[in-house]
Amino acid sequence: MEYTIFTEPQFGATYRDQLAIAQAAERWGFDAFFRSDHYLTGGGSGLPGPTDAWTTLAGLARETSRIRLGTLVSSWAAAG
Image 1 (cartoon, one colour):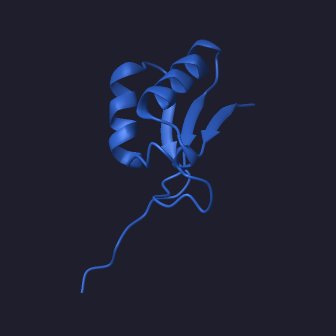
Image 2 (spheres, rainbow, N blue to C red):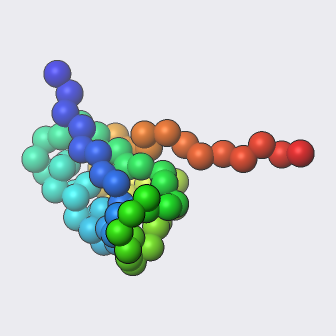
């Protein structure tokens, strides 16, 4: 069985918050850290504001060594 941490940082988590969670999850033996990719909060202030999922995961990859990283879904825009 694998265990994964999933976060919804659009409700107010900073990059440092997400880093702390990912590093703690890795220390505690979790297999993966996933996050949402939403840019809108859907309620509440959402401060300090949303972070980009892929940019955040790239930063987390530099600061973790074993844990798998990913998004629940990935936003994209069609050209044309």
